[in-house]
Image: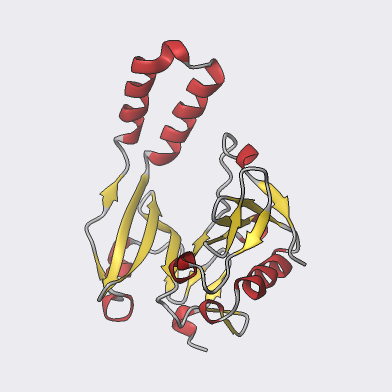
Length: 202
């Protein structure tokens, strides 16, 4: 297994450790790819107020509060891509420190607990992360969130509008688009929690 692609919950992936500055990440370009310019999300607060000004008369007080809360969470956020060939890594920074890393299935070296996660079936991987999480995952659309380890898997599963959770088969087009996101802390916005269902594959 390649330690440069080792998933370490709450810490990062390989040398992409949470807390690094953009400059420190740039110094690893030969390993992880050339960094794109940072994209600030500071204007989200203004955008949120514009939405409220335009549609506020039809929005509930709770909805307006949720829009403002989501905007505040985005104001000190910046994103960046690391690109080698056509295979990007998405990074999230908060207050100038690395807070999140997303890698796609084309990064075949990505591993966790001795398992190359993009070389195994969706069921095997979901069970692996559920056991490590020591609790069932939260599922919506194509996301599986494991809060105790702050990891989200995408396109390993699908959740129907009536809450039925299924694994994605290797024959499905989405299977090639799988990805894993690690964060320093779990992403649990209060206004989105009711969109998930709790489910266990074990």
